[in-house]
Image (tube, rainbow, N blue to C red):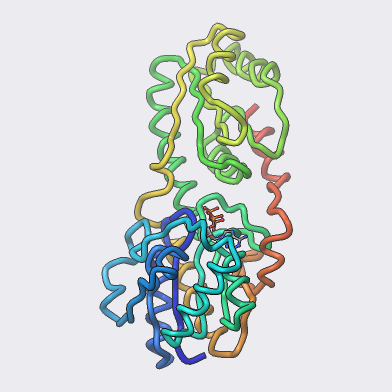
Length: 319
Ligand code: ATP
């Protein structure tokens, strides 16, 4: 590989900047040309790319979001768009690409591979819903953001003797809800992977209330359904005053945690080395605390299931 391009695509996630920084700086360290492509595949098709130097990624390691910006791009679903994207890269002399994003972004990357571009994927999404890896960049920050919110809501919940329903991100996956709920001591954690019964949730609530508990937190992943509706149902069924908080996009922002920055740095630099070693079609991941390489196909065909042991544990400890 003579010239590496890097782009961020799909939803943004804290730690993407640390990753871009690692790609750029490792490429420069290895003396290979490096360009940043703006706004994902949309920017690629529009030819928005620029050579990166050491300073171009200065002062971003601690910032959320992505300085390369990100976008969704309809044209890239079509073979013509993909071909045009590959041509853009070839015209710029870019023969290796690092794609930081989710599974959709990896599908786009695979299309480019079919046109002769070497690609390495890096999982960047707060949802942690990518198969082949225990962890995605941004997940740790999102969990800590939710945890911070739970702590704050707990303070006021205790003072007023209220039940709080908190809705967190996760349309397809309950990883954020599970980890932040376990760490935050939520009474119930409702996730798309596990069917729930509102009467069981209410029974748990009443059991806590009857033993003198002053607050209860119910964490709901957005894929489960409307938190507002759930809050109403709980209030009706239990008679307990219930408040609903939808955390929304604050979960996508914020300065990345040390964990996110460190994995992002390792993944970004390894991606460069893989390209330079002639590798392609791989995604970087973390398995049992170690950096691993996984076939890109695997990252798209399987599902990253919920950690059932942790889920059970959360249920036992919040009784
Ligand atoms: P997240 O789920 O975190 O938002 P993602 O990468 O899965 O991340 P998508 O919106 O699915 O987000 O994909 C990002 C972009 O990747 C799309 O806008 C599109 O340009 C491209 N893409 C997605 N799926 C495909 C596909 N099947 N073929 C080609 N390109 C695709």
